[in-house]
Structures are given as structure tokens and as C-alpha cells.
Image (cartoon, rainbow, N blue to C red; front, side):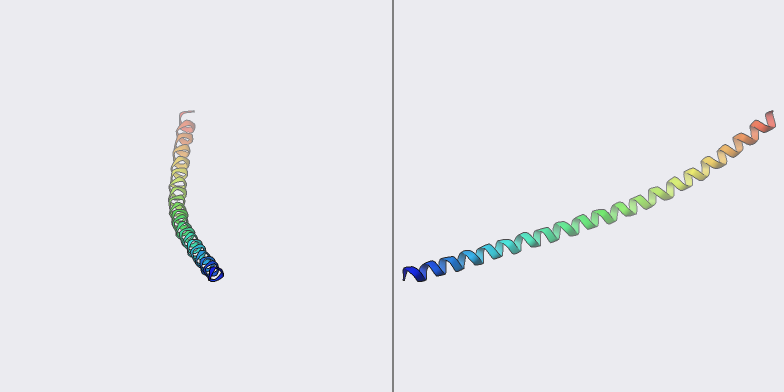
Length: 75
């Protein structure tokens, strides 16, 4: 009887351990999904910033061209 009790207790402990392990795995999967969503959002933000910088670069080029043109006219 004592041996059977130990076997049942060991089996129960193994089941509890497996359930906890599965819970940890599921929590990690959820954390990975959230991290992936954050990375995707940053990629979108990065693309928008890159587009804005390209427009600013073009505007600065036009301003520089206009300034050089005026300097040549004044000289």
C-alpha cells in the first residue's frame, strides 16, 4: 500500500510539473507574439520616419539650390 501511494504521489507530481511547464511555454508564446507585434509596429514607424527624412532631404536640397542661385545673382 505504501509503495502504491508513493507511485501515485510521484505520478501526480509529474503531472503537476508537466502542467506548470505547459503554462510556462504558453506564457512564452504569448510574450513572443507581443514582442513580434511591437517589432512590427516599430518597422512601420521606421518606414514613416524614413519617408519623412527623404522629404526633408529633398526640401533642403531645394533650399540650398535657391540660396546658391541667389548668391550667384548677387555676385
